[in-house]
Length: 114
Image (cartoon, rainbow, N blue to C red; front, side, top):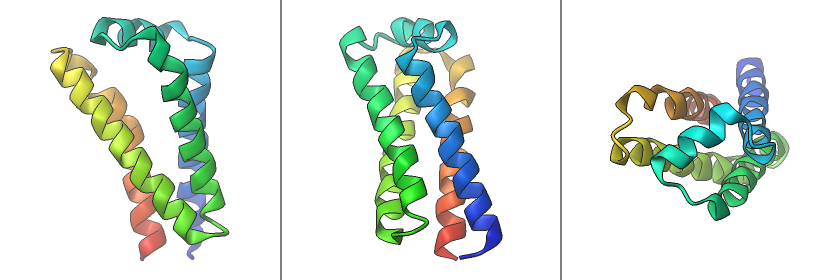
């Protein structure tokens, strides 16, 4: 595995972990849009947990690659779902935000596959 793959994967895991933490602490800039999109409050802890597990899985994938692949796939599905949720809520100006998380996950997966 290349140095670039390791660096991008670690930074991506930290970025996604930050996103999970933001849900757990109910950061205003995260939970207000979730409420606007119609995401039920009961789902928020599950969303944070999915992101936290995905971030941990990316890191674990540096040692056990199939775990990283599974985590990457899960995060791609998660953030694609986030884009769809934003689009369904017609909050078109917010579409870049889930893409800021989706893109590095895809890049990390591509680099580790190379």
